[in-house]
Amino acid sequence: MKKLFTLFFLVLAISLSAQHKIGVRAGLNYSTLSSSELEKGEEIGVSTGFHFGINYTYQVVPNFGVRAELLYLQRGYNYMFTDTIDGVYRNIRPIPTASTTAVLKDPFVEIGKTEVTMDISNGYLSIPITAQYQLTPKWEIFGGASFDFLINPTGRGRVDFTSNDRPDEIFFRQSFDHHYRGDTIGEVNFITGRGGTASIILDGESTNIYKVETAYYHLGSDDKNGNKFKLVDMHAIFGVNYFLNRGFYVGLRGHYGLFDITNDEMDFSVRSLDEDGGYIKRKDRDRSISIGASFGFRF
Image 1 (spheres, rainbow, N blue to C red):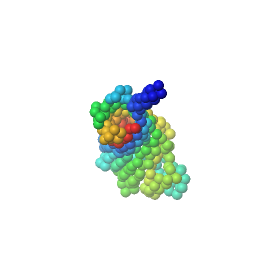
Image 2 (image 1 turned 90 degrees about the vertical axis):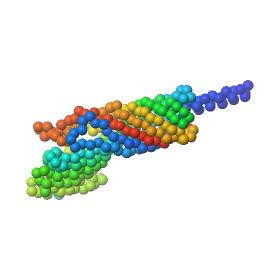
Image 3 (image 1 turned 90 degrees about the horizontal axis):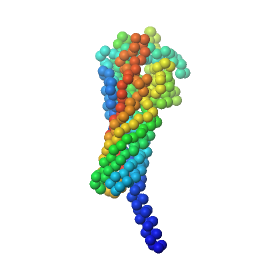
Image 4 (image 1 turned 180 degrees about the horizontal axis):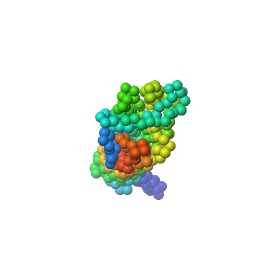
C-alpha cells in the first residue's frame, strides 16, 4: 500500500510539473509610430529598446496552453521635422542675461527655418496574455493581447532654428531632455545644468535662452492639459518560438497598438498657430507598432 501511495504522488507531481511551466525572457524591441495625420516635413522612424521579464504557462493539453507574462519593455519611435524653405513658428522663452534664478521672461513667436530630431523612448510595465500551440517539438506559435501601463516616458533630441526675418540675430541649437510625466510648465533643471545658456539678439540687446528644453518648457498655464502620452495602452500580439532544446528558445513577435497613445489635448500642430497665436490641437490617432526578438528559457 505504501508503494502505491508513493507511486500515486510521484505520477501526480510529474503531471503537475507538466501542466505548470515558469520561464524568463529578454530581448530587443524595434518600434515605431503609425500616425493618421502627419504634417508636411514630419517623418517617423524606427527606435530600438529592450524587454525582460518572467512568464507562467498553464498547459491545458500537451500541445496547447495559456501563457501570462510580466515584462518591463521600451517602445518608442524616432521623430524628424524639417522646414528649411518657408519657415515655421518657434516659441522662444528668453531669460534675463544676468539672472542666476529660474525667473523667465514671456515667450514670443518667431518664424524661421527649423530642423528637429527626437528619439522617444517610453517604458511600460506590460502584461501579455497569449494562447500558444506547439506545432512540433521545435516550433510554437502564439497569439493574444497585452495590457501596457506607462511608467517612464522620455524624449531626447535637438532643434536647429534660424529666423527668417533676423537670421543674423536669432539662430540657435537647443537640445531636448523631456520627461513627460515629471516635467512642468516653464521648468528648467538646474541640478543637471541642462546645458547652460545661448545668446540671441533681441531688440538690439543680447539675450539668453536655455540650451536644453524640458517637455513643457514653452507652454502656458492654459495650454497644458495632462501629459503628452496616455497612461494605458493595449496591443494585439502574434508570434513564433523556435526551441533549440527542451527549455531554451528564440522567438519573434509582432505588436500592433489598439489605442491612441498620445493625448489629443497635448498634440499640437508643428506648422501653424490659430488667429490668436495659440496652439492648434490635432485629433489624430497615433498607434504603436513593434517587433520583438527574444531569447528565453522555460523550466
